[in-house]
Length: 87
Image (cartoon, rainbow, N blue to C red; front, side, top):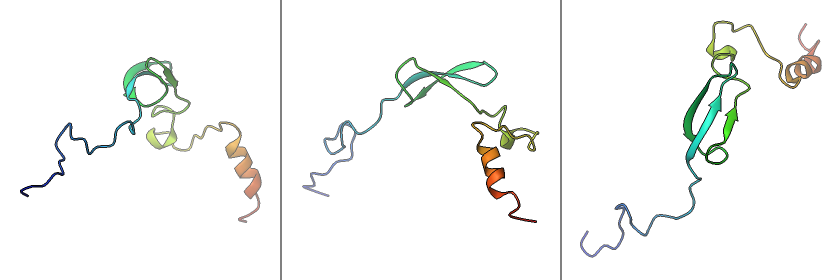
């Protein structure tokens, strides 16, 4: 449009500044101890993200779908709360 002052071009002053999180390299440690480097907004540059559950241990991603790991007693508390609910 002739005379228009709005621009979506890169470097345009119409984009908000300082609203995006810092995106940097971190190390991810899987449950079996293997590691890989990726980019993330987690922590700071060079931090390590230690996973409690990953595709190798989560029942949704492996063939052992009946095996559940009770982390922090959540599963036990749930079972106790609803025991006897359905007979």
